[in-house]
Every structure is written in structure tokens, then in C-alpha cells.
Length: 169
Image (cartoon, rainbow, N blue to C red):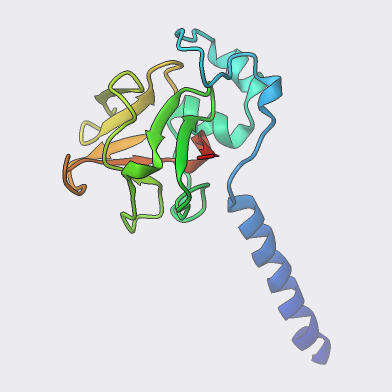
């Protein structure tokens, strides 16, 4: 029985670390994505089959299948650096850190997009929410709610794993 007192904490520690790694933000090499650009504003029309070959599974699941990462696990929910947030799928500029705020939800939240051409809005399939998508590639980014701070009252609640961040220089 003494070996259980020694082995069980080790097993539980390994399981917990594995869980944390699996839930952490997704990084991937954009050089393998021919559509990724911070400057090209042309619309990207790519099939989901092609995106599935290019994107990491966790990014694809959110961006193309309207998934959601768990709260407090994605990239940037707790990022306080100054800079610009981009679509991780196509590189489209989306939000400025100047409009990011702590919504206490576990997801990066902004009170307004970088500009009106950055994002698209459409009713979500559940009929209760408004989905936010990238205007350039059509990827799902999150949802917008009307419980945000002034001056807009909006809370653009984004999935961090479909965002990239570039700090200000």
C-alpha cells in the first residue's frame, strides 16, 4: 500500500500537466499558409478541405467548425501587452490592444474592432447570439454581446486560439 502513496501523486501530477499542455494556446508556423498576410486585404475563398490541410486541428475546429476553446485556456485572454490582434487563419488585422478589456470571462474581449471592414456579423445558429467572423476569410472568431464597457457597450468575446498578436514596436 505504501507504493500507492508514492505513485498516485506522481500519476496525478503527470495527468494535470498533460491537461494543462493540451489546453494551452495553439502556435503554428504561418509560413506554410499561403493565404496569411497582414497587408493583403483581398477576400480569401478557400474550401474547408484545404483549410484542414493548412491549419492545426485546434485552430481549424474553432475557425471552420464554429468551435469554442475552454475559458482561461486559449492564447491572449490574459495578455496586457500593447499591439494588434490578427486573424490566425489569414492574418487580417482585427483589434487593437487599446480596445481590449478584462471581461472576467476567460476569453480575450474587445469593445470595438479595428475597423468596420475587419469583421463580419451574423446571427448564430442558436438564434440567441451574434457570431463574429473574419471579414477576409470568413473564419469564426467568437461572438459579440451587448454587455461591454463604454463607449460602445459591446463585448467582442473572441477565441484566443484563432487570434495572433503582434506587439507594438
